[in-house]
Length: 284
Image (tube, rainbow, N blue to C red; front, side, top):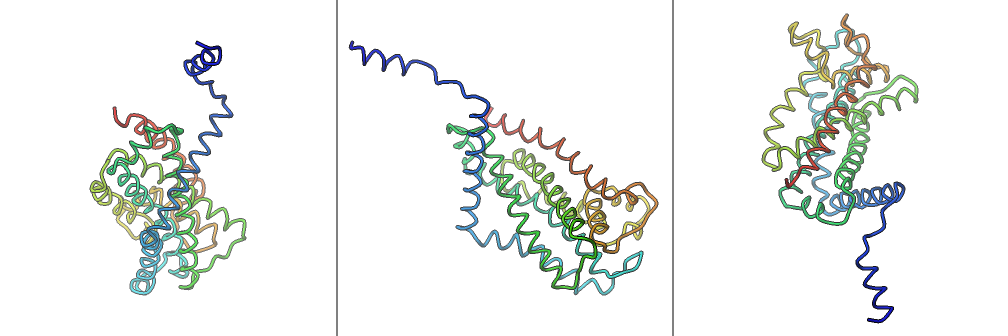
């Protein structure tokens, strides 16, 4: 055997060099961005699905504004439209959970996730790509909803800093619900199971202060609505936007902004590790 052949055989037999922490991070970021690009490519190839996700919340806003809004009143006084739009913004961020589940269970059902897991890519890339894609879609949906709200007569009366803080709280809620959707999607495994989750999501979403004040509900039901995470975000952004809201003597009613930060962080603390653990256990 020649010296060159011996050197080549030794190099092939040697284990690959260990990645440094910086190299692993760069690898994970690059693969995560690649998976995010895959999500954007799906938008371009299937624009109908993206359009539906943007139009549906707008349609709900129009229905509640023009068909039901005439018979609704705000407990503390003020325009019902200005009360409704912040609630619809919070509701739209919560409904994103279903879109996350549908996309993830579709990939699971087709075996796409298993193929990605078998490739030499960062283990976090699939979840990171899903999260970044869904957050971008949610930001676009938020812009569409704000435009629709302005079109039906909604206005904010606070400062730009307060408005940006309100948008930040909405995206924080969406980020928390996103990881809940990822975990539930990994547990469900099939797109058909999403319907079972929808049966639970819709009542929880409507049992909030999005459409009406908890003060108008029976005592125990109003207490549940007051502590709903969507109620916290809706009440907080109403306060930041300077829109009319509901009043009450409970701690939740008096500290909506703080609760709008605490609830998403609690949801993240619960569902993020559960989602990561479930993803690592796939195929076992």
